[in-house]
Image (cartoon, rainbow, N blue to C red; front, side, top):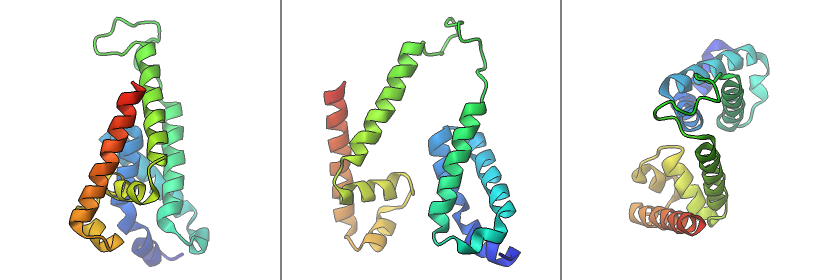
Length: 162
């Protein structure tokens, strides 16, 4: 893949990749670093990138793996046995938070496919209702209503879970 082709295909996806990294890492700086790592990896793989049929999906998969590696390498900033640090959650709360995230992920997967897709377009991809409308063919109002219904279903399931 030439440099020009790389810029044409991969560089427009930078914002999308940053949103994914931010969603996973919950830090602007870490997300920016992860995206930079992704582009370095992509550049090193440039000779085989012509075979990639879906750059968005391929880049997203690489980025997810880079973020997971980054989280595994992260060292705790304080000793694990020191629970007296203000603002630090005890281990049981951290476990509960992880369980909550897993439950919400499962609840999202159980949404009807249409609502799941619309919610993903809105939350993960960061599209406006107008952009969602153009992409799906639904009216803006219909998209809003279905996303609202999906959020209500998630909220209800989460309240029942808790």
